[in-house]
Image (cartoon, rainbow over all chains, first blue to last red; front, top):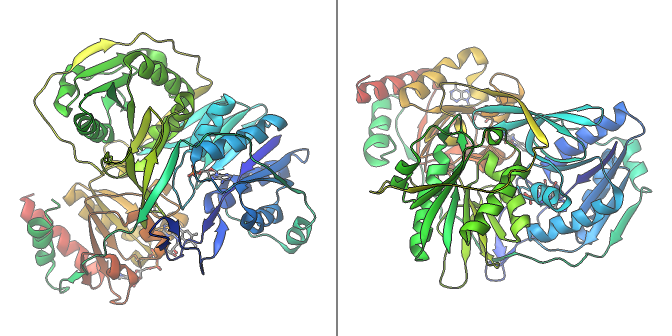
Length: 247
Length: 320
Ligand SMILES: Cc1cc2nc3c(=O)[nH]c(=O)nc-3n(C[C@H](O)[C@H](O)[C@H](O)COP(=O)(O)OP(=O)(O)OC[C@H]3O[C@@H](n4cnc5c(N)ncnc54)[C@H](O)[C@@H]3O)c2cc1C
Ligand SMILES: Nc1ncnc2c1ncn2[C@@H]1O[C@H](COP(=O)(O)O)[C@@H](O)[C@H]1O
């Protein structure tokens, strides 16, 4: 099994969100960046499990980003990736990023391409579907379980109020979320080994950008909580009914 | 020129979030001085002409049984052909599970810029700019779509269904259906419950409830309110509640009109999935719980005492 895992760099889940340059840039100062949780916990770990079950498997990692992404790529190598590509670009446009991933994928004939459910910063949830379309491969989104059966896979995907169980012949693109695997922590051997694993930096291929971010804004601050005494639950219900008018 | 709305269905019925998308699309069409049209795929039991009441002037359908099997590639191909035939220049999806699978594929097929997770109407004074959710609900981005054809997928509960007078003209689509490579084997849905992703009211419980045996107070309140139930991550991780109820940064992101948080501390990763709720009520015995800072209403008290009384008060008010 030859697997490509798409990994992205995101601000830590507890990072303070603020903007600079007239609200056009995310304020990175003091922010810690991490491997996007969906990529780290679910898709990468599932790829590692597949390799553990079949040692002939290979796991490639791809990131479209600047040199500042190297630490998170090294972390993914420490967890169990075999080699990594970084396409040197800081574009935020989904189509552009997907085009870069598709270009690398075309050179390597993967059986399986994994993405995370979404990046926790731009929340596009769209790179996987775009890569699949560019490569003309089937796409199963928001998987909660992934089982290989030789050259095909059984994938559970989330739907409104439940799940659907799909069968797909590989190669395919699958976006992963909770349920696909369990989070792991890199061990010392992995961390040492990661230093010498190949991380190839390439220039982007020509691709269009279809969208651009004009500006960011923060939601208006909450007015503050209205506390109701614990012995007056009817008062809370009255407020919800008459003031907030939510039912 | 027209605005085309994908009307997602299951078991022959249009999903609620798609009706929100229809109302939103009708408004976008009005802003662009054009008409809103819907597209429905697969066997459907609804009166399609009746969808005129959501502002649709026309509904295109392809009632082919093979389309009851969901394959994003097939749907994207059929919708792309429809967009070309109809001459649509804006395509709208609900940002629901199927929308998340189809819209990106369609974006590539049509080389049409996509904004997913839109939360309001486009701004047309300077290009075509759509506000979307970013940083897991902690901020918004105004994103310009720079292509002729534009795709928007609208977040659940971000636009109110708006009923008007009107009957839609109905037409059968005549476009090729490619063979599906994804075969649906099984669909397992909780029946009779409000799906969390569509719910307007959500009652959610956290570790403060101590164990699954105590969930009756949560489900009773949910029942009284006609609400869906949700939970924090440790609760589903411990299998106290099913995984599809997990909300937050790594679970489902929701934006109901009312979110009731019971025995949940309000960690930033939990808030990331619920902070777009219009009204938040927090019940927690610790007055210092961070959730109170994000709440609109709150009671500092023991959930086991307070919640059953709230349920009674709701029943009394509703006369049930
Ligand atoms: C990368 C990352 C992603 C994460 N993603 C998510 C996510 O998606 N969703 C999520 O929920 N969490 C997520 N978490 C975990 C999150 O940080 C918190 O640990 C979690 O939300 C806490 O759950 P809780 O509020 O139920 O439990 P606790 O933090 O233990 O809070 C329990 C609360 O109950 C109150 N309480 C106790 N007894 C009573 C009583 N009798 N009556 C009333 N109140 C009572 C306590 O005062 C306390 O505030 C994530 C963490 C990380 C690091
Ligand atoms: N810059 C990137 N480089 C590599 N993979 C990415 C990048 N951005 C997003 N992805 C992958 O696509 C998934 C969905 O991202 P998004 O569509 O941006 O929400 C992520 O979980 C990653 O697996």
